[in-house]
Image 1: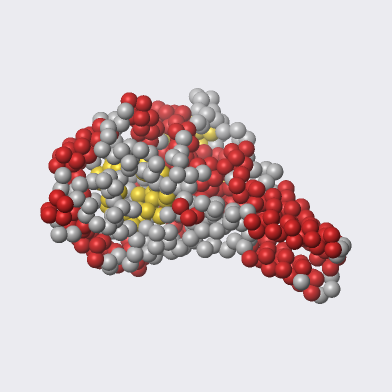
Image 2: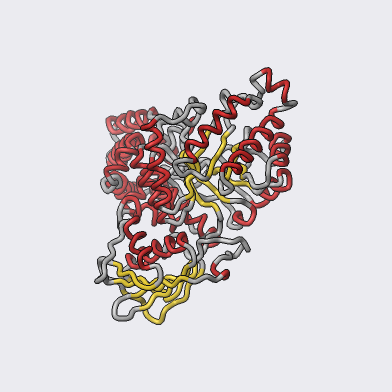
Length: 550
């Protein structure tokens, strides 16, 4: 299976066999573009390559319409044939479609044997992306580049830059970037353009802004002009997590309510951006960004904003278990805007710092793309570990109808940690499914411990000890194949995993020999495990220990 999952495919009579190591040869329409994009993504390309990529550019509106009736510049088709060497013909209209086609072609070639002769593909969601919008230490620049590249390779098209603890984003929003900071931001804009991502620069002035103040408005627009000059064309103004009251006397005189202030302020920014450049776009995060969509604030603000302004919405809750079509329709009916989802998964900041949100995204309805402007996933501070759930988000956003969380998660784990490692590390990741999604946690552990308890209850204690020992051996070895980067990022949860391993080892010994010494060892290990704050295995572990010691 190819990820993200493709929309249409036709079986070949015989599987197309690819060489062990892929070297592309570019020819046909857009050959130079194919070579350039291979360089961007690090794919080897040479005139004497062993897999031929033949470009076929068309100017046909049929390539521009997706199944929802919305225009897209991302539709492409691939014809795969054996020939003297394997050949993949790419039919496309725009460069973004060529990018997606090239990345899919690379995954096809890496599969070594491919059973389809034709693929036609296009996205479910229009805007598909991720936001660096968490509280905590912002990513390092190289981490940003790495996540951007991976998400581009998996067909995302948008990156929102909004780190809460970047001083120029929130605390010092009025200040222009200094030379070094502007240089770093410029490098991000350049990298986004290179990777075909829309770079959305965000600012959060709400802590100190005076909505009626002309001087502050000019300062804001001067800052927006500064980032415009380095190539930014997509902007976000975030007024979330601020005081619900108008803080300045002048604002209380000028506006009857916070709603009126926000409508006037955001519309004025949008108008000024359009005067600067008609291609500029604006996304707004409102003060109230979650709920039913019927609340007075969001209904009034949404109705008062220009229709072209996208509005961020997190769903019924700040971190929503589900995002539904019905709720999206309600939002549209009350605001006049289709929601642009700021999805607070996999983020694990604030009160969620003891959780590692590594599980696949679930609870987002298959038809949600019909009723929303798009979905932007809020990332974790852990850039490498966060790639695993982000890949599943990308898979869902591209083809939500065929999205399989389990298959997508298995692929994501091996894409980030290495081929052939999913089975072993699953005994570790199995216990990191705590999040707002309320996915089943500790499934493998549950199955084992229930079997062990059943064996004990039916007088098969020796069999129970052997079963628990087999599981414990796999559990202990599961972290050995984690990459060094993941080991560093996940050290907090690895500590908890190690304490759990020690508890299981002592439980096996107690099953094998019920001595008072072994019993106390289990009790001590259980206490140490429970004292560690990291969220880990669910209640099945405590239930088993209680059962074992009673």
